[in-house]
Amino acid sequence: MPREKGRKVVASNRKARHDYAILDTYEAGMALTGTEVKSLRAGRASLVDAFAQEKGGELYLYGMHIPEYTQGTWTNHEPRRTRKLLLKRLEIDRLIGKLRESGLTLVPLSVYFSDGWAKVEIGLAKGKKAYDKRQDLAKRDAEREINRAVGRRGKGME
Image: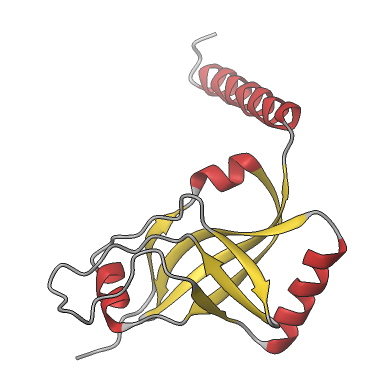
């Protein structure tokens, strides 16, 4: 059987980009069991309330929900178990240093298969205040209006 090519997104955390200012992103592997991979390949996962944290010099993903595999037996996995993130030591040390220095957190942005391997994109994020969120919405609305006006003008409607 030929290997998979490309990137197939399983789940994305759209709310994370709304609640946090993403400063940097990293691609990490995950230590998964067989039934977790099968459930992910079926397109079933949720990143709501998920976060990454340092524990004992390693990074772990907490709160990610991968439902039990329907054809699994007694060897099925626990849906919200803690999963180890697989990164290079240099990246782990750099991330841990940044997490300790200021009010930053690690938020999973998406889970996907890259060339057949399960990956998670994590973002180094800083929490947004309510006024930051309002400013972003106002900015997005203004850009949308500008694009509409330009489009109308290009079509000769004005």
